[in-house]
Image (tube, rainbow, N blue to C red):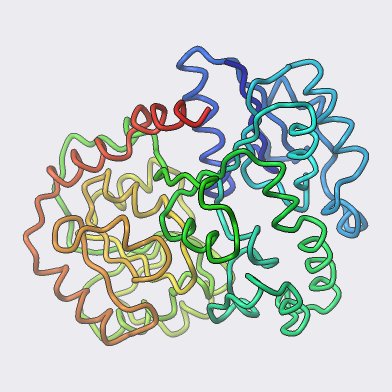
Length: 383
């Protein structure tokens, strides 16, 4: 089978990019021919297909690229002509590439599959956060809400562009151009139905990872717990620091972001900021932690940070928000707490610390659950 994958970036930038790169390797390993459509970007991996890709976004492109420009249409059409795919599999394509590529493929009679990594088809901001702070679903039924609250970058101008983009690529138009939407969590599938999308076009398949990179010779633990992720408001890190400050346990904070200096200033000595790390270091730090905390305050879809931790034999304490609870079996693979609730988080950290977890069994069961072969079989049913 010939599959064309599309994602706006082609390097390990975020979950959508990691998924696209992993999926490319998985499909190739099973003998499929795979092409990629992306945007030119300095950090991209080399690709034989990059000659078809549009240029990197410039400031002036923000006014036009979200609506489907000639450069994107020409490059994608040439790739369709030359590669002749059986399936076009979209990931994050808004703004830099735009859903115009779904329409082009559909008009050519090519089947279009779309994995939903965020809520962009429902929320012009993509994350269902009003001004980046509180959960909001107002745009599910009326996209004018993004104008009322100036949600996009807290800017009226940016919000106008986001509103016009959402109006152009409305539900009816998007749904017509896509044959199936892959939902990594039941939560996002339910939200899509809430936003009016046809339930028959939604298929829930939990994400996969390369489990080989998670296998460890030993599942012994050191005397700390950890957080891994971007240090930003929606990740709930401030709530975690507030809780950790009142407890005696060592917390290793893995990652970087806009709140780094602010959090450093309020953190007590038992909180260690180790900064951004590559996978080999992450594997060691998360793998040796007693448990990992995912204190998110936005609608996380299917966070790889939960899946990877469990595959490393590390239980997860996750906020009960978005798709996080679907990944945690209470008292077996971790625990959950009420998002934003510092007192509940403190109690659960203490409880997690005192449980005698079976780390090796947890790792083996997670690796069986999230392995690529399981995902491949489900994906082939859709293709």
